[in-house]
Length: 249
Image (cartoon, rainbow, N blue to C red; front, side):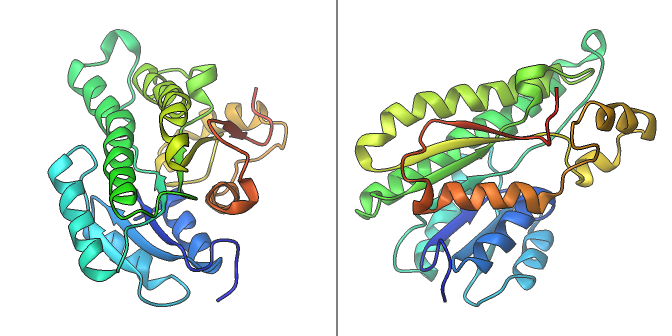
């Protein structure tokens, strides 16, 4: 199969819906074999059923649990001869509330999944690449958010987590370059997903008005950029944060 990531094995978290599912579909279309990882095993399986090609794998993975991630990589190596060299950290949650009403639990959960989960998956995945001597040419793509730069009402925890993903990406870039692994972040703007479906219509109207393109983006539009960063076409892009917002200011 031809494509910009043909012959590669990709590990995608948050694969059960939204941007994660779109990324799986795009990578498979571009020739990769995909491990679709999600906390919800049923949704991960449903994603795999949508993919072009064969020999894809779905796994239930809790990105906050090192044991769960390690078990996933054991399963991957039982199914494939080598570990994934493409990693996309798309797992994320929101627990929105006005700052003065935000609970410590909701703050911790968002930071754990969105930031710590990105760290844990990346560390375990890159160690597997290095141990298997396949790290040269490896690529990690982290899903951050434009609100990590600009802020957003009722999302101080989410903004902090996504700003952290950007900082993590820049720091890890320096450490991982010597192993041949690139790591970059994509910052979506206002994208039509299950996460944004719950946003009240009057808020959507305000956010769309702040977007130069005059509309919400689609998960497919994010997936196109992720696939580029996974591929050798972006071989000199490293430690970058790429806004994909339609011009959101």
